[in-house]
Image 1 (tube, rainbow over the protein chains, first blue to last red):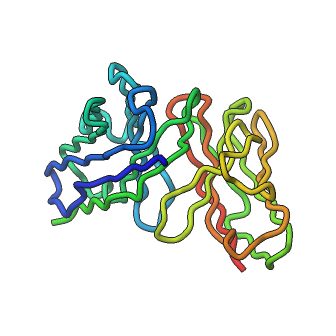
Image 2 (cartoon, chains in turn brown, purple; image 1 turned 90 degrees about the horizontal axis):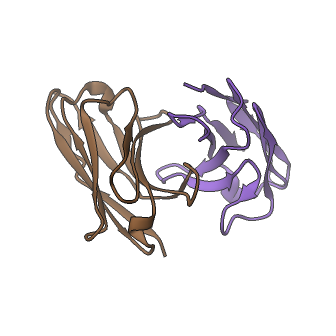
Length: 119
Length: 106
């Protein structure tokens, strides 16, 4: 059974930093790309960032480019999202999602972790 | 980026009725379209990918159709557990983008 468990969400001041983690199990982790998708309170879904199975290729939404960094540790089966220079508009539930086998849809999602950016 | 729109914003139906949800892309996405279901307080769940392929474990009452810019998700006979928000997502071009969602309520 595929399981994704996020952690690290918290209340942080504008301009601050936070690191999210996602622990994966139940599949051949290094064979799949992974992504972070966020959802602001009461709003829709927004893709944030993705990383290839081997970790050598990363992509970002324009809204976070230069501020967020995605990484992974295939030995530990973990994905991370380092978030710097946080803004109020980054407030959201952040979901870790497994990318489908050949295309960039998301076939499994974690339960999400809440990031609140406020003074 | 490709803009996804969904209609209607809210769909009110009764259990046992058929529901038809629409999704439109601002440019062709071929068949690179997925549908997700999200219930309150829960993560999204993949229903359909490739515009018409049901994900593992998804009941046959859910079906997807369309290609290019126009797509449809049909729920043939609504069950109580189907009342939720439904999102479409294109993955044809970067960045991948989601529609704003259709809420299906009673």
